[in-house]
Amino acid sequence: MAFDASVTPHTGRGADVGAALGLLFLEALALLLIFGLWVLSGFNLDPGRTVKADPLSGYLVAAGGVGAVAVVASAIASRSGAVVTVWTQCFIAAIVAAGLFGGMAVQQHEDKLNQPAPVFTGEVGCRSGGDNSECADTGG
Image 1: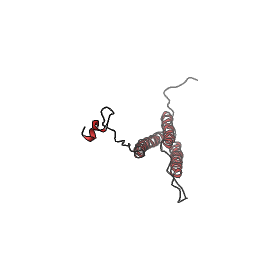
Image 2 (image 1 turned 30 degrees about the horizontal axis):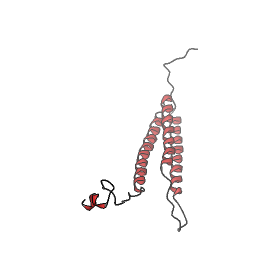
Image 3 (image 1 turned 90 degrees about the vertical axis):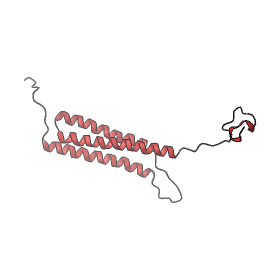
Image 4 (image 1 turned 180 degrees about the vertical axis):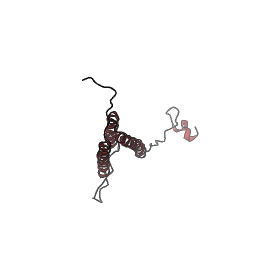
């Protein structure tokens, strides 16, 4: 029996919708777990202790992994003709990508807020390191 290249694989609509819903459920559960762990990292019941949430970067890497799985699933579904699964996986990948960019922006903003202010030593502007008459702030 010879291989017929004109026949393309096609998934039944029921299996396509089932796979799409199953993958959506698993990916939403994974993203909810990742986000929940980040929220819980800053949760504390002791009113005398202040706890900051973990940096977002590690959790963003995990969410990026979920997005990568969605892209791979979309490619596999495309090869098998599962149109509904392709669209839902592309949608999840776009949502995860938007979340990654937004999360990176939030983390960079947090990092800027947590940097200490520069310390003024009073010697800024001195030309030669001699006495104070040579410093710009004293008029010398």
